[in-house]
Image 1 (tube, rainbow, N blue to C red):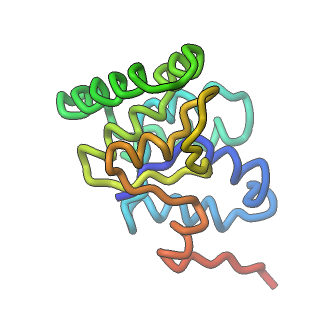
Image 2 (image 1 turned 180 degrees about the vertical axis):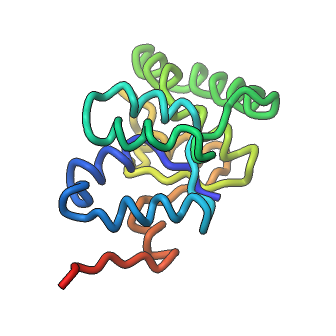
Image 3 (image 1 turned 90 degrees about the horizontal axis):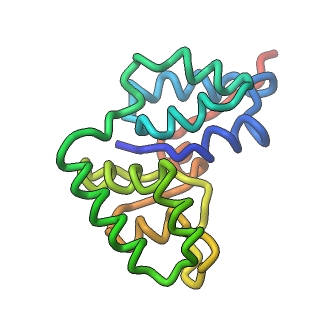
Length: 164
């Protein structure tokens, strides 16, 4: 199972897989929910629908399809507490800690840890970061595998072809 970070959706829409130039990516995403267990967490849903754009509308249309997993189960809550304690005890600036813990990222790590899933994010690890808490740093700290969108697509042999 793969759990997608908000940035995988946002960067795809804004940069390389816009709805108007690569609808095949979004079709693949819909099929991947069933085919290779691509999911996310409810906090990512909340972040994405807060926008007022085509992505928010696309996400809203998929609310009940099972791709946004709940985070209310005891195992995920316990994992989140461990992650929060590690972040609070880390050498990050207080504003970085607060920002990280208020978002979806710690919930992605917690849910991935519970499910044995891989986090998919476009972020990169930053071992010396102080001003922000990079999602891959927490994945590494908690033994959660992570990859970027392109690795996920390659791993599943996704290919988007132009129509003739």
